[in-house]
Image: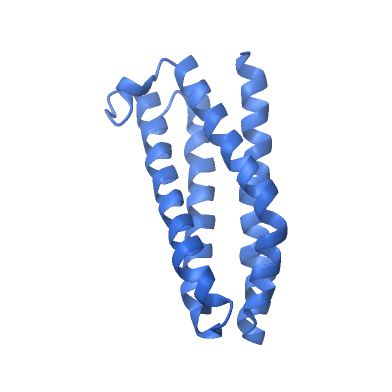
Length: 149
């Protein structure tokens, strides 16, 4: 598949993934905390999840395919030997962290949040963490343009 096409898919997906989390963090979360109303977050999540998860899947697929195009196939992941390997491996570690936060939120925090506004601070930590990780992944990905770090 054409590298430029993969990059466009990757960037559009990153826009949806990171933009959706920034909107949640700065648009909906403050209101939910102020009103102590978890339904604000839950309603946003219900609307955002189908497009957000699709974007995340496309990010992973396009990212892995581009890594292979840069010569960083699976056997080189987490070796941190070359500048491009460092970027790819760092982004993969951040992806694993994102997945762990998502699983924790989905199976541990969200079910309790529905009936317990006291879980809002824990959900806030998850939301802010995933948002920050997404922004870091974007920043690290930009180093590919300069040959890595």
